[in-house]
Each structure stands twice: as C-alpha cells, then as structure tokens.
Image (cartoon, helix red, strand yellow):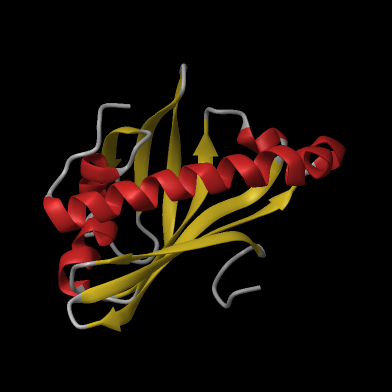
Length: 166
C-alpha cells in the first residue's frame, strides 16, 4: 500500500505533458479546474476552503446516461508534487462493489518543459460480486476513464483545449 492511502493501488497510467509542473499543478490541485478537462465532470462544488488536506469537494459527473455525484476528501496535498482524494459518498452505486475508493496524481519532471503525470486508482473490492467483477469489468472501466481523462488533461494543458461536454 502506498503510504497515506487507505487501500492498495489497483491501476495506474501516466502521460507526458508538454508543459511545466507550474502549468499542470493548478489543473489538478484546484478542484474547480476539473470542469475544464475532466471528461465526466459536469460541475464541482468546493465544500471546504481553502483546499488542502482534509477538505472536501462534491463532483457532479455523468458516465454515459448515468448522472450522479461523489463527495471526496483530500488525503494528500504535496504542493507541486502530488494530491490524492478518497470518495466518502457517492450516488453511482460503487460502494456495493468497492470500498476505500480514490485516486492519487503525482507529477514528475520529464525533460525541459515537460511533466509526467502518473495517475493511480486505489480501492478494495467489496463482497463476492466486487471480487467477481473486479478484473473483467471494474479495472477495465477504471483504466478507460483514467486514460480518457489523462488525454483530456494533456490537451488542455498544452493547447487550452476544453474537453467536450460530458
């Protein structure tokens, strides 16, 4: 388990962005910026301000025809380096199959004017259905969501290309 995370990392992808960490960091540290590049995000409410360890946000999202929301608590906030959230409440029904769900984003230098963003998802399968669905369905869906979001973040950071409406 990664220190500071409540569950084991279950999936990870990375992307090199042709922008400095000073450009990329505000896009992942400021919850309101998520609306500019996060593919499923419709709206973000910052519940506690200023944002930092222990603060919460409510993310309204749409996955296909399913709309709902997550309340996430910030677990980690290492300035210009990494941030992590854990879902505390959700309306999508994920808690039927998973628990201790969240993600961590980490920035690494990748060369002059480039930043590698590593995005990891963590969770614990819950119950027999969670264990059965884990590898063939849940991990595959998470990876697709992560890769779409990374590509969208890269496009926004490099070209200010706002993601299409969810």
